[in-house]
Image (tube, rainbow over all chains, first blue to last red; front, side, top):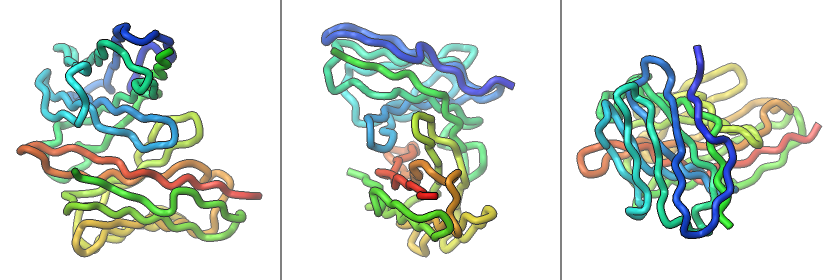
Length: 119
Length: 113
């Protein structure tokens, strides 16, 4: 079974540009979450989607947006890139949304990430 | 805002020594998960703790959830070079009727052979 796949693995953009990152969850997982990890820090929560609906949003500006498709894959878009957006963007899939109870369904399986460099 | 802090930030140990990382939340957590991230890798799930005062063991790893569900610890007995990496706790918190996982600041472990 394939794990969580993300693309592209690396990309370089310049300030002001826009970027789209893609994520395919584990087969059977309906929830996708996006995290930003700056070098040396812990992952910061950006979005969670479940059944194509946004179920949670972190403290990120409106330049960040995401969506989930009927096949449960997801895209993260970042507009008007800033130097500070340089980071590893991680996608994590789980069986259920965070509204589910304290079960293993909330375990996050991460992809390898997309490393974004903004020049 | 809701924060999850971990101490220490870095820990260097000789192979065979024990290691402990502590996780402290500013708010009560619904549950807590622990992840390990190898250098250049992505976080990998280790365990989930749900109940107040819960203790779980995985071989040389012992995980504990505090009675108030605001802190947790991970203890590794007799470290090995394969334990190298950054250990993150992730606490589940409620916000505006939904839940999200807030990751801690991480503890980077180096094991000297």
